[in-house]
Length: 81
Image (cartoon, rainbow, N blue to C red; front, side, top):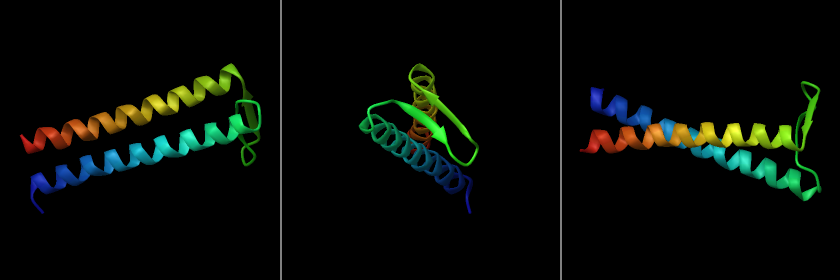
């Protein structure tokens, strides 16, 4: 496996994981809003955040996914050029 191929696959994984996180976060927020209240909760760990706290968590997850997609995309473009 060449260095180009390894870096390319790593950057592609970053983009794919970032898109998956983005889709899952948007879906969870959409389902939460469909119930009439923005919430972020986990029955497994026993916590629930509502309103502004949930919005802050969703914003952090979306920002992280965006950064991950951006880093992978930039890496792919850099290796091409």
